[in-house]
Length: 376
Ligand SMILES: [Zn+2]
Image 1 (cartoon, rainbow, N blue to C red):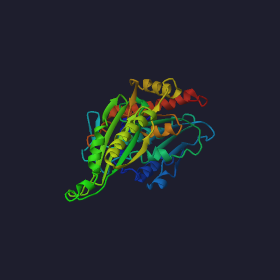
Image 2: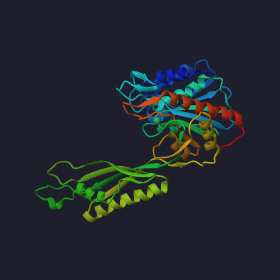
Image 3: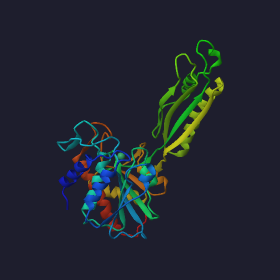
Image 4: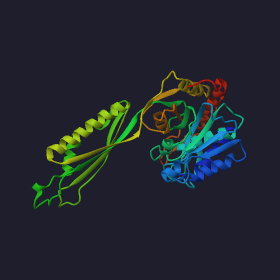
């Protein structure tokens, strides 16, 4: 079987391939080349076409794949949030970093390396499984949203994309909505006829007094992230737009907080004769995995066998697992230790890369042990 250095070299090989969201074609082609001559079929779905990207999601199935049987899916995303073309990669005392000019890209090339290495080690061949590499995760989980399983009976999805160290996994995840409050006041000359104007900026300021931001409880956070308004110093501002987000443990809790925020804006608008348009957009739904489910128990055993400490998390960052759970597929996001994701000093420990790989191997080995009949 492959040694650890082979996996580390594969990660380094993948990290420098350009692949910002919707531009993952170079990585997709590289993966295809690496699998050339091995007993897999590699399909590309239509997600890229729908999103305006240069490739779709990759669906990789072993030769013995049977579309009539339940399938377990192993997943990572191909896109990076920043360009990693030609970054220098440094290794020092078991830590892999970039040269500081961009992110390392361990989010999520470490996940891609782990799963591609599993495929290259064709000796591991559990019952019905497939590996999926998605596109456009970093711009709102778009690839997973459009991922076309073609009517397959997907019984579990293991996503290798949590920045937490191996052993951790997201058992409970918050859902997230964005909001946009558009306040329409009335323009007037600020000196000649200010009494004829309604300042949307001042209405927004008053409304925001009634909005609580920050961490409200363990799983609830609210932020007002941007505010734009006004046209010139001598015009009473006719328009002000504030945007923000709400994350919480259930859709109901998110909705309650959004209602409160909308009420704060509506009340201020009413008081001053302004009008309000309040737009809510779902970014991702929450999920809460059953600790007694076969999905969770299998993962915990795989982590345990890899020698890591099982660490189920309550978390508020989204991943492809959120979209898939919402679509009705049992999905879990697993820690791979791509730490400080997106930053210039992003890094991964070699031991974490190897442990994540062991966890993935164990999941496949346990699938073989459990056989085809076990349902999640
Ligand atoms: Zn990621």
